[in-house]
Length: 419
Image 1 (tube, rainbow, N blue to C red):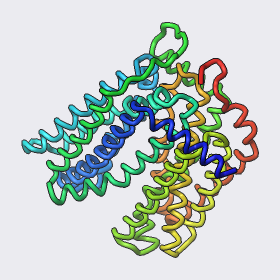
Image 2: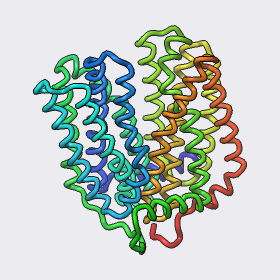
Image 3: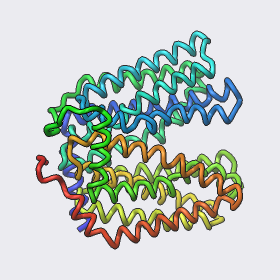
Image 4: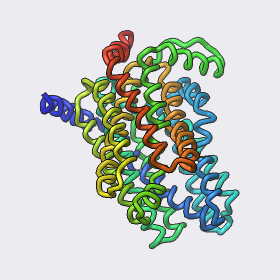
């Protein structure tokens, strides 16, 4: 049965990769995401070089993520009013302009921490609409039938870039300096800009929409999400996993040094194992059929929770690394299946608002969770908060397993929209 599902999944993936537009998008997205991580390494190094302050590193991170949290609902409502491909092209062109300005400021020597923060804030604002546009355009490129394969392959691409980008950025800084690294990131962003110019997608039918204000659209979108039983459950799962499991990535430096007595090399190994698991999950799901995603999602929640509990209690470094590989695999599998089930179930006219809300939770909740767990760890040590979060996630997974039939029933494709 498993071989049959894998065979069907590989057939679907083969059909998907035959699409010229999807190939252009994947290639461009891989280049762009790699460039983003290369640029992040350069910006982090710049911020530290300019200030020597850990606080400024936090300010830079907040400048990038803050606009998505603040403007996510507005961006989603706006995206539902606009042509998604044109919006993606426009915001990508502005991203290219931002990268050019950052490089020019570095080359001319006028860059200071205030200008750097302002530029990163501008990019974060762009990404508050660019990121959900990247997610929603996959539906137009793949269609509902191949959506699971498309989202999974995109996740594999993202995690590959997340794995490769920092390594490329670090090496480029050593051999070419900050300006050379920023130039490389600019070139990679240019590839995605060209790829978007070569893509064409048919107009996605959104249904009739009354003329209304943006605020009314936001309210309607939120009411729709709360009224959709299946999507409501998926968002509850997303919140639980994002708050209680994802913060582990931010706490890994403390585990490496304080628990396992390892230096930067040990931390790099831990991140690498987590990244390998994430990439493997993306490729596995991209080669798998779309059937049974609810069961896969819930099984991965339970497996991830058990692995997290084992990680929080072990003192063996090699076992912790193996567990991190399992955690990375399960975490990305949950993200892919969760997003696929949501995108399959929702109406197209609410897609932008739904995915922007999804992005707000996926980005904001881990930051809140890391802040809370870090505060608790000051009093209890690192193991306690991670163990407690994993236990709650396990209860969520077991509760979801008991209601999996209910979830399957309410996460069916909309009957009033074409596949």
